[in-house]
Amino acid sequence: MKYVALPEEKVRRLSFYLAMEEYVARHVDEDDSFFMWQVEPSVIFGRNQLIENEVNLDYCRANHIATFRRKSGGGCVYADMKNIMFSYITKEDNVSLTFSRYINMVVEVLHRLGVDARASGRNDIMIGDRKVSGSAFYHLPGRSIVHSTMLYDTDMRNMVGAITPTDEKLISKGVQSVRQHIALLKDHLSLSIDEFKDFVRHNLCDGETVLTETDVTGIEDIEREYLSQKFIYGNNPKYTVVKRHRLEGVGEFEVRMELHNNIVKDINLMGDYFITGDMDGQLLRPLRGLRLEREALEQVLPERLDEVVMNLRRDDFIGLLLCP
Image 1: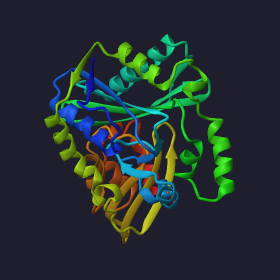
Image 2: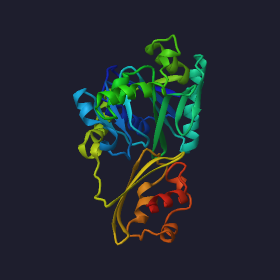
Image 3: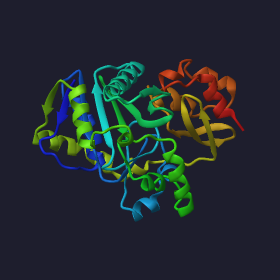
Image 4: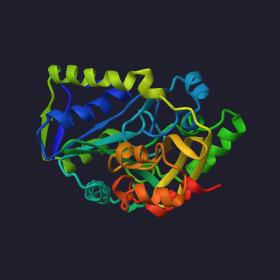
C-alpha cells in the first residue's frame, strides 16, 4: 500500500481532504492508497443526515467550529488537531471485504503497539468497552473509499457541545457521559501523536506517492462541491409524514414522506446508515407514486435490500414505512 503525500505540509480545510480522497480514487493508479490528516475544530456529518438534526450550529458558530458534509453514510463526527483522520482508497469493490480488511489492518497496527484493540459492530474499533475509532465508506466507479477517526486526544467539551444543546449543564453531563464511552490513545500509549502517526505510516505502507501542485489544483476543483451551500445544507423535499426508528445493525432512520390519499408523492430517507448500492434507483424511486400498502411495497422493493443499504432487510424496511 502506498502513502499519498502532499507537496506542502500544512493544515487545510476538512473539505480539502474529502476532495483529496476522491482525487486519489480517480487519478492515482494504485491497488491501495492511504493518508492521514488533521484539521482545526470541525464537525462532519453524513451524506444522509439533516444538519439541523445533528449539529448545534449556534455552538459551532460561537466556538469557531467549521461544519462540513461528507459523501459517505454514518453519523456526525467532531475532529480537531488532537485526533487523526485516516483515509483508505482501494480497488476492492466488495463492501464487507473492504471494511473487514481495512479495520483488521488498523487493529493489527494497534496490537503491534501493545494496545488491546478489537473490531466491533458495523464499523468501530474498541479498546475494552470503549470506542477509539469509527469508520464510514462510499463507492466511486472501480474504487472504494473508507475514512475513519482515530482518537488520540480531543477537546471533549467541543465534541459534546457541537452536537448537543447549548445548556451548560447538559454539556457538562454530556462530557462526563461521552468520556465513559470513548477511549483516547494517549491513555494507552507512550508515543506522542506525531510518533504514533509515523508508526502507522511505516507499518501500513511500503512506499510513497507524492502529489504535485497540479494535483493540488485538481483537488481544489473537486473541493468546490463540498463547499457549496446546496451540498452542505441539502435540498429537502416538503413532507407530511415523518417516521423515525433505529434498526439494529443497520442504523438510525428518519423517513420523510409527502403523502396524498396514501399515495407516496415524494420520499426522503435520512440517517446514519451505510449505502451499498443505488439508493434512489433501487429504493426511493420505485416508491414514488405507490400506494403505501404492504402488498404494493413487496411488489416493487428488491428482495435483497442489503445490496442497497448495509444489513437492511426488506421486511424491516417495509415495517418502518408502515409503522404508525
